[in-house]
Length: 432
Image (cartoon, rainbow, N blue to C red; front, side):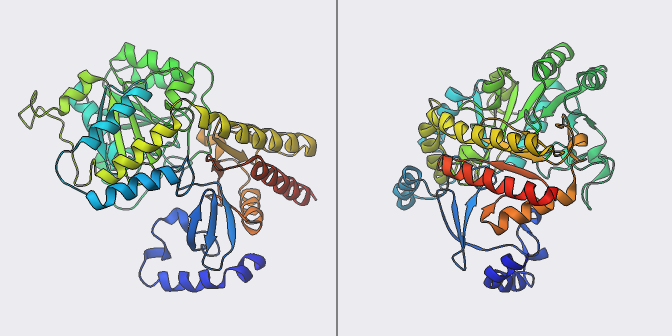
């Protein structure tokens, strides 16, 4: 990437400095862009400016958390107003009620809410709550599904789904986790047949796999199977929550789970996670109804419900309610998806596009993937080459090995035209 290296010499210096104090030189392995990451100095809307004043159009938008883009004025103003009043109380306050009420208004499954500081924590406490409520231990997840770093869910994330996903995992913590293919109702039926499963966790649209879409009636089929077997259906909507629609994937697909895991957008750009769901399930967290520790599903955290995340999230939900923002972003997404699909058709290349509304992904393979195993068959050399091409031309997303991207309100039709134009430029060169 000679052009990249010429433009980012200071970033290279910073990366060398970072390697002395940060493992791998980064705070998250995903951010270790080859040959080294560019270092952001500032961000506004969907434009990132690095330390050498190179500007990138951002299609990662804070890991998907920033549906309003970077530094939206209304959210920043609300946070500024709160800052002198306190950033973290450690006691109850009205703002945590305000955000919970708005979540319950927008998310179909939400009758009660508990906050965490991340999506990983929300998944952790969801598994515990499901086990407490059902009295069962087994958990079903999808192959290729990512639910954070919690040991029982850190299984079958990467193809071929049989290797240990991290050093240091407790093998016994993984014993009660069953992984099945996405979009396979027969596999779900078989896994649920013993009626010993506490919860089936699923991303309604698989994120790490490259925004693989559920087939028609798949999510509804899972709901029916879970009801028959007394298993709780859990939607991990850390990515899709408030992104596919104001009510998330469950509103978009019209399937209501028992519990929903939230993160990212619900914090308005600040750290947050949440688990929401049916009142009768969430009563198992209630210290009044279940005063004995062995009966209650324990949940908490130092920064849960902190006022900064509460006001930022509350203001964000006020802005997106009604769906006007989503309609605007979806038009941009439709333009990109259709534009890339047209290019693929004209050039007769082995590639496909997945995604919907504010998300999209490009897979360099003959067929559109229906699960993570098929997504893993994408041509990795082409995927990396496309990433290099886009980055050198000022388009940023993660990761080099998986072209999946997310949109925000500040993205314009001109941004979409640029993305499509650069894609055609790449396909034209790559075909030759």
